[in-house]
Length: 105
Length: 229
Image: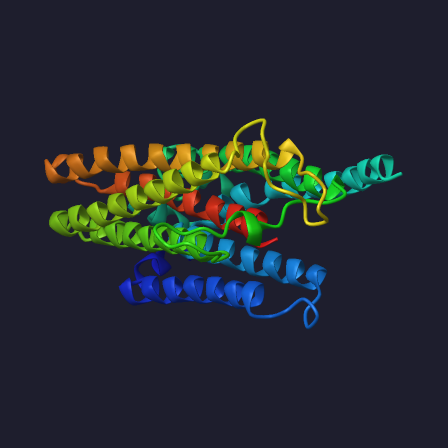
């Protein structure tokens, strides 16, 4: 199933992914430089940056690193351990909020 | 690879796939190990970046990236994000030339592989040059491990955490880029001397390509976390 897709990712698609990545970066620039924080508050901007970053990561891993076209067990072997990173993010947000409360007298 | 395909089309049973003689993941040993290495490297970078995120989140205030990273070579004035934008563009472009080298390798087009690999190496060297300039500039401003001349956004003196984390993380990433350039040079020479033609496969280009894209991937996160937020 996954093998026959390999040949379908051609030079044209490589450049399409390049323009997607360049476009997302351009959007990040516009948000950072052209939109004042009175229009778009900082927490909203940060959320948007993170969504766009994960979108870029998806394009790099799926197409440039070709993971989307690998066999399903290889895809899961790489993606499932990322759950641990999500756990560390959750743990550290909780913990750093506590540090903030400790130091913020 | 073809043996694995034949078997999976005949029967999908686990015994056939894991009974030996085929590649259960549909990828060679070397490629699989490169993926697992990159996964472990992803954990290392995550640890660094999340330590940064936690320390920043727990700080009452933090220097503004638009103020700190606003210089570009030769021109005076404040241009927030412009220089790092160029660096990001260079790295994405060198990732594209790497994919094109891998694609040429699939067709066994030796000269094209060499051409795209040389572009990739140039991209990597340009990125390292930009980073060297940025570090030098920040060092002239008095920023280094253990010293932070930049004020926080609220006007209070900045913590050394800021510069320590910046130089450690971009340094570790830069070291990855440097290693990538060295490996790229080695495989370009191997391609040019016909090693992969004699071997009958250009898979080494693919494996090194995975590493190079990973370096680009990490930069995407460094860019967002240090320069945008």
